[in-house]
Every structure is written in C-alpha cells, then in structure tokens.
Length: 316
Image: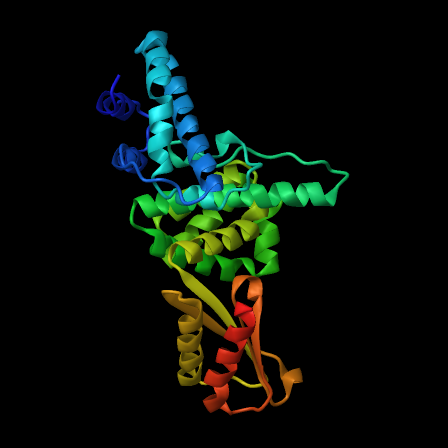
C-alpha cells in the first residue's frame, strides 16, 4: 500500500484529526534529516505510534485485520523515516520517559497523555511524573494550536489563564475533589467566554477536568510557555529594579538582549525589589543563567558596555 492509499485510508477513520492528517500528509517524502539523534528517535516513536493508532482504528472498523496487517507491515518504516524530516513541536516538550500513548494522530482527547503514576512514598518520583505529564499535555496543545495556525492565540489564552491561577482560592476550587466536574467546567466556561478563549483552549481545559489532572495545570501553563518561546525563538528577560523602569528604557535593554542572544523576539518584564536601593539587575538566557548587575541607578548609557562584557564572559 503506497503513501497516498494509506492517507486516504486514514482520512476515512472517523476519529482521525483533519489538521494532523494534513500535517502528516505534508511530511511524507520530505527526505530531510533530523538535527539530532535524540530528535530522530522521538520522530521515530511518534511515527510508530501513528501507525499503531491506525491499526487500532482499523481493527474496530469494517476494513478488517488483513488491511491492518498490510498497512503496518509496509508503511511503518517509511512513515517513520518521513517523520524524521519534520520538526515535531509536540516532541520537543517530552521527556524520554513519556509513554508512547502520549501522542497520537487522533482528536485532542486521545493526544494527551494517560494519567501517570508515581511512588507515593517518594515526592521526587511524583514530582517527575507530574512534570512529564505536564510536558505531554502542553506539547499536545501546542501541536494542535500550531496545526490550526492558532499558536499565538492559544498562548494569549494561557497567559490569561496563568493570571487567573495566581488566585489561590480559585485554584483550590478547581482542583478540589469534592467539587463536581460539571461545576468546574461551568466556571471555566464562564471565564473562557469572557476572555474569548480559542476553542482548543476550552476543550483542553475540559479534558484536564475529565481526566482529573487539573492539579498539574500550573505546570502545564509553564511548559506550554516554554514550548511557545522555543517555537517563536523568544528570549525571556527580567529587569529587577528598586523603582519602576520606563518603557523606553526597557526597550533599549530588550534590543541589546536581542542582539546578544540572536533571538527573533524578546519578552521583558520589570520586577520591583526595594532592597536593591539604587541599582538594577538584568537576567536572561535559559532559567536566567546570564545576568548583568548595574550598580548605579539611571546610568543607562553604560548598558551597552556591560552587555558586551557579559557576552565575552559567556563566550569563554
């Protein structure tokens, strides 16, 4: 069975996601190589999972086991090779420990990971499982949003949601086991309607409620933001100052960071720390790994020299 025939077969399955079908169709036969071996392996696993999902759907349909056997035996490796040539955004946020069921080419409810279990006696194991699940959920949402050309819109939703979740009372209500799921969905729908959330965001939140995984929503928000920043080549910077810094001055700092990091975009925020008294600090890079400490307040004309010095130190 050739690629075209297989894709026609896939398109006939009622539970197949059209945007992802189009994405898979586009990826076939590209011949490009993955940039890293780790990326290559993730692409292979993603492709094999797609084939497994095709097989499961076909077994339940009238096409019969014979079609399944032929499709899986003749196309598994070619599709795996084809998927190596595409940059799969969903894979970037996944740890290697995430199960193959994390991603499929079905609807969103089938794309999110199954509930992970961890040893209750080890907070570290539970934490790692939570982080892995959050990466899987956020990666699934990012891939769907990307396929629908709605990544920026969904990211805006996530930012608004993040602000809501800072309210501890609201957060505890949404994760409470004694509150009915329909009540939680009703509250989320009201909020989503007011904020004009994208349909993918709304569906995603409902899935977290249904799967009783809303407790990891804060981690999901963080992971989704990280994926978005990576996809859009956005550098995150924080200016910590004793007093609020004017927007024009923040723009100068952002411009210099963009030059140093070669990022397409820079998102900068100003945090206030009165203990600094007369100076301010700038943190950027992965997890704030790079920083500049300006000890004299208002001496913005020295920013360029300070950043150049920091760049030389980072290059050593």
